[in-house]
Image 1 (cartoon, helix red, strand yellow):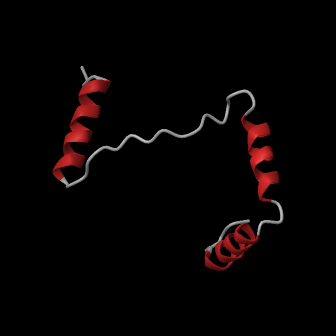
Image 2: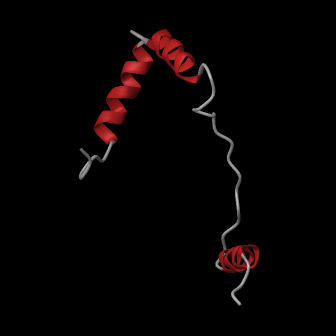
Image 3: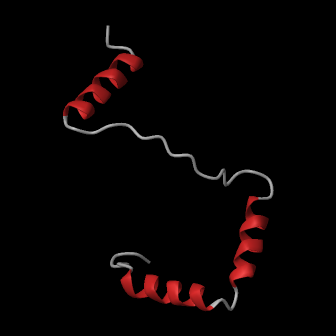
Length: 70
């Protein structure tokens, strides 16, 4: 009989820790939540015409590596 899922996960995490890594938990907005898209639109509209936003967008455009993306 094979190992359980929890045993495999434990072994994998132990190996990662042994290689010098540690787990980190990151909380991000739930894109499935009702109203998420509307709030994104609202915040985007607030930045329309903002000079700092334009400067940041221009920098991202210049710095971005899109080779291989379509």
